[in-house]
Length: 277
Image 1 (cartoon, rainbow, N blue to C red):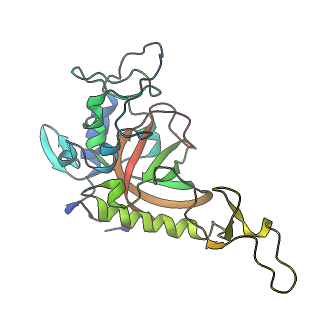
Image 2: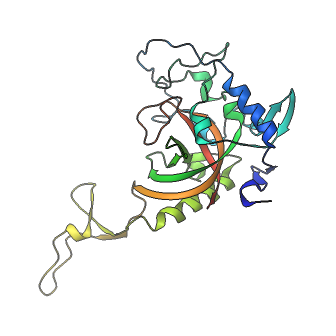
Image 3: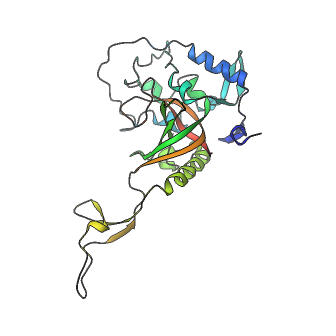
């Protein structure tokens, strides 16, 4: 068994990589689904669920459908497992319509309230695994580590690793997986971040110590208190790291995110396992 197709324990359940024939059936059934009919774009309604955060419970595994994640339907039966795919396949997956809870016609439109607690089947109940280059990492204001994943064709999509803190992911069954994935990302970006001392500047702002006037003369005081290396500030880091990435499918709203799939807003959110090449 190679490293990329080893069993992965997610939320206390162990999943094997599905056989290519079964995985192919799942992908084929998704590709055959009709997307929501196109409609003129209108204003996006703002939903006061979590300010500035879209479908947060679904992103972190606190939704009503989380128990179905990884339970794939093949030939009318349930086949638990991880489905192998590619960036290219995922960015071409339709956003299937739902007759009872219609999805927005465009990936730039917001979701109605029902989708804040439920998953778009079967894409968002599937654990996907793909091989890609991680070409950039960005720390988001919501605590996510935002990964830009690039396939062999040059197509890109997003993978997100939430902050593994109950204040952010609550009682997620995937907490241990998120923590492990976060540590891998920290290892990737560690050499790409140049931490340096910051000092308190005017008001709330921190400034690099190297830009501040240095004290001179006997007994001269420093201009402000040195708060030490600060690696928690938002960052963007260009990297090039080949990896096998496993995560749960998620359709986001396209709003100019770095590396987003413009066609459908597909992501791996959350990323649950990263194996570096």
